[in-house]
Amino acid sequence: MNSEQIIQMENENMLATYSRLPIVIKTGKGCLVYDPEGKSYLDFVAGIAVNLLGYGYQPLIQAIIEQAQELIHASNLYYTLPQTQLAKDLTRISGFDRVFFNNSGAEANEIALKMARFYGRRIHGNRYKFITFSRSFHGRTFLTLTATAQEKFHHDLEPLVGGMSYAELNQIESVMKVIDDETCGIIVEPIQGEGGVFCSESSFLHQIREVCNERDIILIFDEVQCGMGRTGKFFAFETYGVKPDIVTLAKGLGGGLPIGAVLVNEKIVNITRKGDQGSTFGGNPVCTKAAQVVVNTIAQADFLKNVVETGEYLQQQLHQTQKKFSDLIQEVRGMGLMWGLQVPGKAKFIVEKMLEKGVIVNAANDDVLRLLPPLIVGKKEINQMVHSLEEVLLDIQFTNTVPGID
Image (cartoon, rainbow, N blue to C red):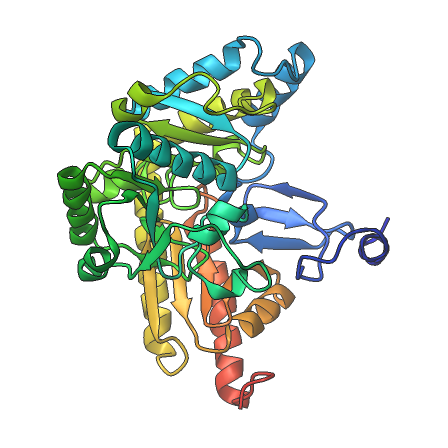
């Protein structure tokens, strides 16, 4: 089938909840994807921070094939080796005490919040409230959607889950205004992705850690998007030098297969009871086998060193582009291989024009262009992306028009 036929078939059969770009992706290799007609696109989104090792990574593919031939599913009524091996790998690399597996980032964050409430109830009796931060995104279950402090996700779903307060990122005073004796947990993204690539300040995360220590509140880091090597460290918390009580992973963990993980310290281990959590597919043998390949590849010092070096090069190129187009790019922010460009009212238009040039980028919203390339990206791919971006920006300057913008 060609692209037009596939799009038509979807329009006739699938619920229209996605605003898709008008391309069909059939296959991929490295940092490139291809449509059914054979046209290639340079991918700087990586399945929304999922395809960390790019496309067609043979050790990953081989591990999936071999495990599928041996055992696809057993459920958590029984023990399976791939799940146990991955748990050992993650606890070893992270320094956390235990891990729980599920299927997605939303589930991981939901479980983390439940764990914090279990702790608040079982240790302190009356604690049940949470604090999260403006522009955050933690998932689309009712609890994680409530934790997501963006009104556009709340429309027509009120009333939301109670016990949630919103503070301002990097403003400890705003945290102290909403914290009280019933607060059981604080959840924060070290780098906000969906909200527009806003980085937490190191001093702020240290302050939150101190507050949580003083009040015995559970601190959760949502590293679903910013973890797994994207900052140049395996975990984003390592970049900041602040260790939470719980950290959540998903997206890139499975190399493209659905898996999430919740890593916890001894506080949570000690209050956990049989039946507190459960998942039919969590820790699925095929997904955990794939995740082992991803985890052990990314954890290598040379791999992370390359992410740091490539990230620094990308940062330099983006700042040079900002200097050339300071009238269009207000700010460049991010770290490692996670970057956002503040381009008020122009992000979606830039995405469309970049696609025409064979480069896939993302609009976190219409004001922020988001870049999340595979962690294997090189200078050649960065140069191609930047060249295409500058062509689009030059065209905007020349014509001085963006649809929908006066």
